[in-house]
Length: 198
Image 1 (cartoon, rainbow, N blue to C red):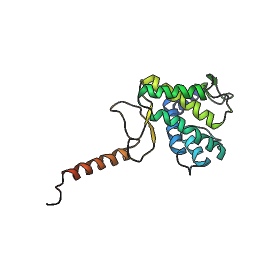
Image 2 (image 1 turned 135 degrees about the vertical axis):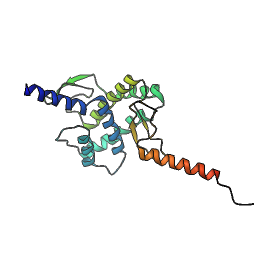
Image 3 (image 1 turned 30 degrees about the vertical axis):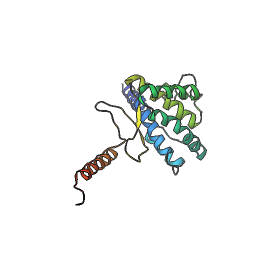
Image 4 (image 1 turned 60 degrees about the vertical axis):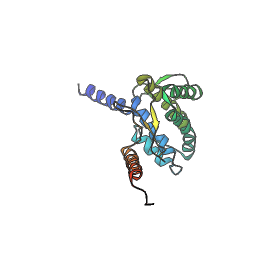
């Protein structure tokens, strides 16, 4: 009985770290990290670990260069207008960068799960594009809304996953939302102040 409970706990942990939503959040985190030209293999490996990739995570400078080239393609999904726009981008990316669906357990090291890259040893950039497209497509399918957006705060290029109930998110963080509210308040206040006399 203990064995079954332990296996069940391991499967639950793995599933939560590799859910569609977790994979989509990893996509946004990688796009944001790769936008920084100073981010090297160590930074990217740390982002991967933080989003559920098990050690050893071996990322080279060449891998980062290739992933950095892939990131703008995925960024287009976040920048698209509406579900139809995001779907059009995703359809193009799936056609150009994904292979046929296949199930893998990585030689028995993980629970069975779906991959769209060519094999378990595919390069990081291929895996990044294929797994990200799959997660973003499933979120769009599930919610019938764009899976994410680009932050609406002036000067903030970060992308984020727009998941959840309530009003549509416009900002990547509370910090950006607060900065925009303060700026709008200052603009409104400046507009109400009387001008210099005469």
